[in-house]
Structure formats: C-alpha cells, structure tokens
Image (cartoon, each protein chain N blue to C red):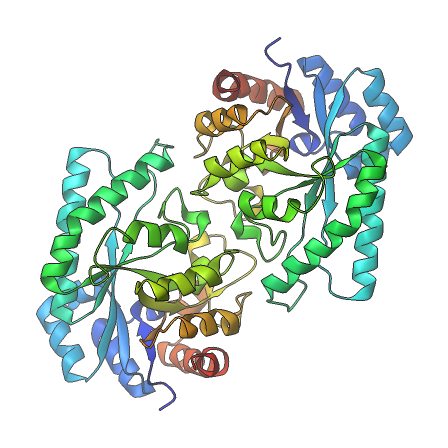
Length: 279
Length: 279
C-alpha cells in the first residue's frame, strides 16, 4: 500500500467537518488523519473518537496546544487549563502526540528571551499531565517569520534544547518542512532528534513564493514551492522515523478547491516527492 | 553630537537622488550615508564620490554586491564581473564595506546546500579583489523568509562560518536587526562577531507586523514593530562596535512620505531607542 504512512491533516481540507475528513481519508485510501481541535469540538469529543475508531483510522496528531507565553496570572492560568484539556482530548482520540505551537510575544512586549523562559516553565508544568495521559507534547518550531506573533520557538535545535530536560515519552519535536527547510543546521538537527528519540511528527508541506499576502497561507502542496522534499525526507528516514507523514496545508486556493481533488493531488505528490525517500 | 554615529541608508528615502540624500543628511545633522549603487550610477561614480566628499560625509556602506548563486557559466561570470565592479565603486566612494546579499536559489533549483557551496566559492574569488581595493565584503544574513529568493545565508552564525577562512580585513558580517532579531543565538553570535573581528556594519530597522503584502517591505521605523533595539544594541556595543549605525528601511508608507520628515522621525527614534544603548 503506497499510502500506508500518509496522514491528512484536517487543516488541509478546512471546510470539511470531522465526518467529512474521516470519510474523505477512507475514500482516498489513507490510514490516518491529523485533527484540529475545532472540528473535534464541533463533532463532540466522544463522537469524534468513535467516528475515527470505527473508520479504522489512526489519529497521527491533535492540533494544537500551546500559546504559552502569557505573562499575566490570568493568561498563564488559562493556558495551563487549555493545554490540560488538549492533552485529555488527544488521549480520548488515541492521538500519540499533541502538536504544541508555543506562542509569540504578548501585545507590546518585545522580550523574546523572557517569552522563551515562560514557555519552558509552562512545558515543565505540562509534562506530568502528558505522562499521565500517555500523550506526547510535540514542540513545533515555526518559521522565524512567525516569531513575534505565533511561536518564539524557531529552530529544531532550539526545540530539542527545550525538550532535553524532560522524558522522551513526554516531550518530542515536530519536523515540518515548511518551517525548517531554510535552516542551515536542519539536517544535523533532524539527525539529533532521531538520536535523542525526540521525533514526534513529520509534516510535509511546501513553501510557496511569493509569500502570500496573509503570510500564514503560504503553505503549498508538495512540488508547488521551493522545498527539497528528497533531502529532508531522507534525513528524517535516516534518523529512524517510521511514523506517519502528515500533510498540513494552509492555502486559500487549496481551501477553495474540492476536498476530494485536493486529497488526490496531495496523494499523488506524496508518492512522487516524499515516498521514494522514506526508505 | 547625539547623531554622530547615525547613517542614512539611501533606500530609506528611495525617491531621493544622490544629491538629495547628501543634502538631506547634511541638513538633518547626520555624518554619514549608506549608498545604493543605483543612485550612485545615476549621479555618475566620480560625481557621486565628489558630492559626498565635499559635503564632509562618510560613506558607511555601499549596497550592494552579491547574488552569487548562479550555477551556469554565464551567470557565474556575470556575478564575478558585477561584484568586482561593486568593490571598485565602494573604493572610489571611500566606503569601507560592500554589503553582500548572497542570492537565493536559481529558478527551479531547490538545493540550498549546493547554492551555499557556490556562494563560498564566489566569496573566495572576491577576497583578493577586496584586499586589493581596501574594501571589506560585508556578508549580510537575511531573514529566513528570503532564503529561496534573496539569500541562502540566514543566520549570523552561518555568515561567520562563511567568513572564517578569510582575512578579517577582507570579509566581515552585517548585523541587521530586522534580519537577525528572531534568532535564539543572536546575542552569542553578535559577541562572536566582535571577538573574531568580523562586525562590518550595524543596520537598524524594525520588523513590522502584519508582514507586508510584499514581504520585502515589512521593514519599519524603529519602534513601529517588534524588535527589541535595547538588547541588540547593547550586545553590539559590548562586542566592541564603534562604527556607524545605519538606518535602512524598505516600506511603502515611508517611501511615500516626505524624505525630510522621515529623516526627522528616524533621528528621533534613533535617539530614543538605539543611542542610549550604544554605550
């Protein structure tokens, strides 16, 4: 089965409900889905878990927890509570990993070092919750263009340093091609993630140029942008990754297209550009 | 004189000719300008050099050389020739440094490692030219959002590694706040640049959010964006930088405004946000 490791992240088919994501994945022959919390909430957690289970699908990740950089007591408490709930939801869905986007700078704040310290504190607090529920916190470095508004965590090396104090079963890292392809250290840090047992998710998606007017939406179908999937996938495979390969695309054109056609295109590009290098 | 280290980069007042840049800088009490090659060419090289000299201004940098990633013989030869000319122009203008933006990926190419190797080869070829003319090649790491189309050089650490094989008087690095503020290693790499004698230019400019529809134009007047000028300037000063502080802003609103007003605003923000931390 050539699609046996391909997972559809629900953000790729943004207009689909959970039931439609599950149905679409099954119809396209995919064994797994990555789910965003909004469509899980819309479907109801128990119902969502049952729908996925009865369809025979794996849940590769739940997206997402995080936004841990608040510096005020109320914001810190809210982030703790929200992330505790996200871990519980991941457990209920049978997702091995909760993707964690750590958050940017609070409004008016320019202190990246301080924000990074608060992230480390919040992660340490969440580790017991993660262990209790058997869910891994998958720290996702985001492209540096999002450092101020979405993630003060920008490189795999930084994510691995952040994970290092904690048990490997509690904290891992996400390798998302869009976010890390530019990094001159990416191949050595992918190898390090494997060596240290930290790889928790491999997400593939292209980096389109020119950057979209809404910079969040510059993610593209593999082959449409500038990412070299061959070398990155070879490094991820060489580092021992045998898990799912999740496709997560934020892109207005992709969102406007028919979901089944998107899934067909994604499956084809996966087989052309990614699968041959998975080893 | 509180503006005694402030330099106006001509890109900030994009509509001004060389004569207007010089006149504007003198009128605003600035001792230095950074010049782009286009306005130098429009004025004529000898005339430009004389105009700046007679106004009593320093030329902090010439912008720019680079675009060294071509993989075809004609492209390689053209880059060699253009950069040789740029070094000669910098020498004629009395600019100590030629800013080098190394270039992105050739069309259709996705091999960042290969492009980086070609950059290293081209720099090595230019070193004798730089030494001969007493001009330093100032390697500028650009924000990773430009890795594919403008600069496969993304971090100060990478720039310092690229400079390392060459004499310090031939190759240095640019610290541009917009491009490097996000880097978790920025403070240690600024310190390293000082220690290794490689700092060749300090450029200040903010990172505005949201990112402009044309991502090149997200540079902002200091204080308008998310950059912490205090900590970066303190690190640059602690690393021994005693040279000019150049303000280079690509921003449509700034370009549409009156140049004298822009220069007044830039001077004010410099005195508020940068100067107190220069030591």
